[in-house]
Length: 197
Image (cartoon, rainbow, N blue to C red; front, side, top):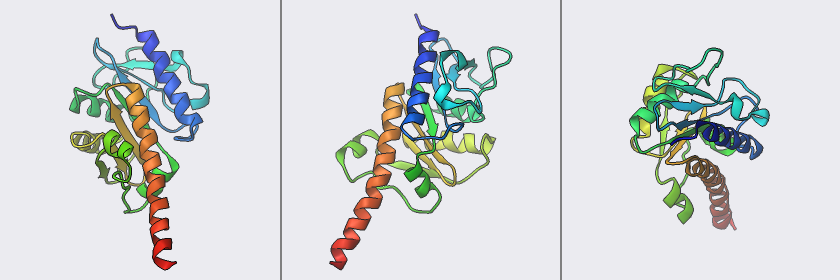
């Protein structure tokens, strides 16, 4: 039997870790976790990520409608719902704004996920989607299409979204994606130096 309160605590814990690791901003980013009984848990809108706890995590149905009055879910709840519908094997979705990934998102440049075996195995190919307004139906639909082909999506002019079978797997993918972005910049600089030295 599912322990919803335990899962709420896990979602809150990973949201705090996301902020503490510098992978998102105080009010930015969101995490969801699928419930076996239907629907999913998600972080609230515009809430201080450093202070978030289990009691702040709310339940929504499969369409993202809150199960209780007074809970204001993340602006990206529609995107989480669309992604979870698109991938029955996915139980966790994380959206964040890692600085290096966002630098790539702000340009047409792409992250090289083939540099080391960890990135190749954990994130594989990275999908890139155009910029759409936050919380829009267009963004949700585009992300649902993108995750059909990839576990990691870079949203131009916005940030990143990753999926996983578990919260641990999704969180690791976000970390590895940011590391791959950093390594891409470092390796490119080293190659330039080696050509000019």
